[in-house]
Length: 425
Image (cartoon, rainbow, N blue to C red; front, side, top):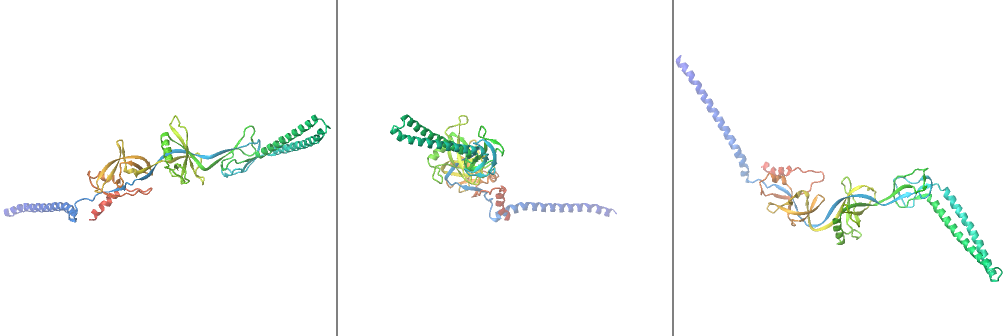
């Protein structure tokens, strides 16, 4: 009994020791597995022959000098080239409207009809008075002709002959007055038919049939506006106008007909640009003392009537042309109070900051006047990648393409493309 009791107690520690040794072995194997994993992962690129990550790609454009027109955008308002108020020049009752409101009319086209009866009667009366004057003139002339041989034979006195001659001339004057009265009556009769003074588009009728018009003042009946071409009026500072005049005098602007006039473009309220270009007509002779602005006027063709008078628009006018200027996308220029800078990528992929002088923006691009040389690579895209890289990291320059309107390129797309080869390995 004692022997068996001792062996039972000694077997329990033995089993515990075996379990502990097994646990230690398992932990050692797990630790070895974890330590080998980073080594395998880290040794993969080295085993493949590369220990350096690929250079990040950045989009660049090549600086190309050329002749660039400096464009300024100003607010303006459209105006009809000719405006005519149709008024009643004869007093009477309006009988009929002879046009369709809002339509195009021709010069001389009948628009309204006023009651012509009183003017027709006045014309007939004037014609009758003329006939009576012509009869009296014929009688007086015949009497003077009969007295002429008689006064030579002393059959009538010279006084009687002189009186007969004077009566004949007075009768001729009455005939002239009668003819003028007939002409006046015909004119007044013609005023009963109101015609268009100019060709253009007519608006709504301001009076209706049955209204008494022309009584006292000439009643306004309608308005005709000539909308092809249209005028656009806008203002600009006096200094800019002087530069524009110098550019025109230097012959920088030439129209198709050979005239020296700056071209303009009209931008509508929705931001779209009108298809047909216009040309500058003149600048005002005086400067507004309160604002220092000068009024300018340009002519814009409007054959389809798409533009309407009174419409507020934006006017893009080419102020001058700059030689050897370079245009770069606006997103490539960093603007600060210290100045404007761009990032230039050299042949080795190193990036350097460059201070530039810009003039104006047009078509989402800055016009660079100084600071860049022809052939240099200006960085446009990839700035976010460089924020995660140490300073001085070389880059790979690739041609930048402007995104299509409405399309957005995610910034992470180039980074994903660069990491794709490493993932493939």
